Amino acid sequence: MRKTLGMLLAGGVGSRLNILAQARAKPAVPFGGLYRIIDFTLSNASNSGLSNLGVLTQYKPLSLMEHIGDGEAWDFIGRMRGAKILPPRTGEKDSDWYKGTADAIRQNMDYIGTHDSERVLILSGDHIYYMDYSAMVAYHKSRKADLTIGMMRVPWDQTHHFGTAIVEGDFRLLEWEEKPRQARSNLASMGIYVFNTDFLSYCLQEIPEHDFGKNIIARVLRTHKVYAYIFDGYWRDVGTLHAYWHTNMDLLRPEQSGLRLSAWKVYTNLEEEGRRGDRQPTRILPTAKVSNSFISQGCVIEGEVTNCVLSPGVKVLHGAKVAHSVVMHDALIEPDAVLDHVIADKEIITGRRSRIGIGDAGKPNQRFSDHLREGLTIIGKGAQIPPNLVVGTNCIIYPQAGASAFRAAEIADGETVS
Image (cartoon, rainbow, N blue to C red):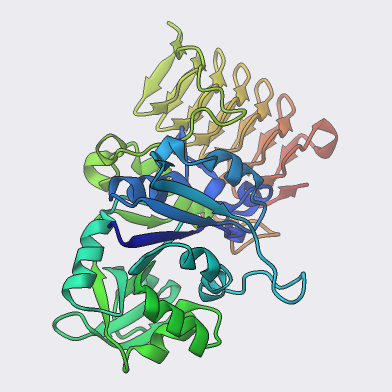
């Protein structure tokens, strides 16, 4: 890995995560109680022996930049090591933001040029997985490839979400289809690329296109050596609300799911401003009932918690019941409140005897039917749910919504409060 430079694309908008990504980049969304989504790629990079990593930010980058800091939390610090934040660039016009993955790398070729690298490992910061990139780089070298693409088999009904490849017996690419309606292969791209540096420079100079998957790969696979590196471990795209919730739930069944945080050596920045890494120990009182849940430091549990992932500082008070939910930092669940199949962002308050996630899961959200239809209810950061309020399923409560935003005693299935 000594001659390999990492470039981590972390500027994603994450629009399908709806209000969870309203004020933060998708890779900065909290995950699994203690972590952020980007922690998995950063930890993989460190554990794989990568010494230098450029992190490309763009959409609302502040929380992400504060989280990464100087990279010390992932051991990217030292005379020959580093994680460099590469802020948003503009082209000839101020409105020329990154137009795709290739365009993002193209606008940062000056950073790549400052390193004596033979290869560039291009990564995405918005997936949950464990991978040894050094094995992929060794595979790339053994094939004498110009480009190697990390790929895995996906269910056939999911192929339309990915770039897919038809390969020879030695996994050299023959054909490429970008998000096909009728796929001929279920071998899908993970958005992980190893380029020879000179070949990357050639592609970005000679092919004036914006995206590796949509534009460049199909143009070069017949004239250059492009191979698939087959990955068969745990990998999840958490780009939708249901996928995000489901992947959090995978934490609670590691034997079945394969998501094993303790074995993966996932690191995070506990010293980041506002995260309060020195929280008090978790308190589980005699009145509490906790079953199959991930409870972080600093939580106070007086009520019932079943099949949940709770971030630091969550309080579930006497008589409250929280089930099948993801609840982020410093949320307050007041006495006798009920939450079922809820994703709650930081610092929310659910009033006494409120009931959230109660109803028929068959009616999708009216405003965002393509985002929310599986029966979850989403509460934005800092929202305050009044006492006794009933909130149905597939509902969205916008960040900072206060008592005045709720004009009825019940929020029906599929409604949005903004």
